[in-house]
Image (cartoon, rainbow, N blue to C red; front, side):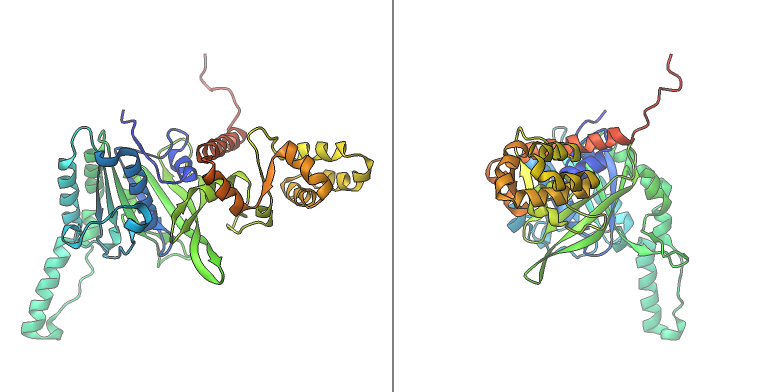
Length: 395
């Protein structure tokens, strides 16, 4: 079994797409990344390649097939190397047939000790050879006989070529190889739907053969001084060949930095974002300490109780709001009180703002510890929702 995995560049996304079996995408699979414009599709594929390059260095080979001719990222400034080389070496498949040949050729260049990533951006940018041939015939007819002689066509040759047979062949080529085929798709509305449902190219065949279909949508814009500097993206697996499908998370993309793994991890660890991706006010007061207690409703009530009868009113409020929002409100009040702040931080950790904590974690090399805390919380949530029942056929 192929045990290599490809990180997305985000701990949370690695948990989402790994589905409890792995941490990241498994090698030897076809992955589909789906989203509307400005939802981070291309950015995410760049992060995937950058993370793989950081892991494997010269043992990594990759192709970025810019079929849509829309790649404009300065990846050398972001990651220190070019993801798409100079123009004369750029791969731009025009048709699905050409893409198939380019991918086959790429697989043939991989040595046994090398790993590979092939990104097609996007599937929507491809036509078929028959469509190109027919376009040439129409043009010749137009030049020789005029516009009236040109007939329209509604045939779907590209859709026919992107059949179950085609994707079955692709999955067979990638299986047991240390390679990842990433197919980027553009979201489009179903024109015959009463409920404004969305779809994307590739049809049922891609739904069936893709290991993961990761759908992206822009949840919020990151704004500083009235200027948009990034986006908060919601990601969800609508298809996942793992025991944990339909998982989702938020992650932040900063245009001048890339995927903000530390910031996204803190948002999850401290429940800083609402269901719509908006930032909560509790980001102004976060506790961090290696041996600190977790700020739970129970721990907070016990802390207030120890302070004595003069805090009786606060104790009543905490008991009344024995939930996550109550914890936030009471914590914010405590760290604002000079007499309680030092005692609180000695027990629960030093209080910092979100931006301050990001800087502190990076300055003190705490990224790995943060990652482990995120994984632990993720698994605690999974344990809380699993079916706690005996096996049906256990002896």
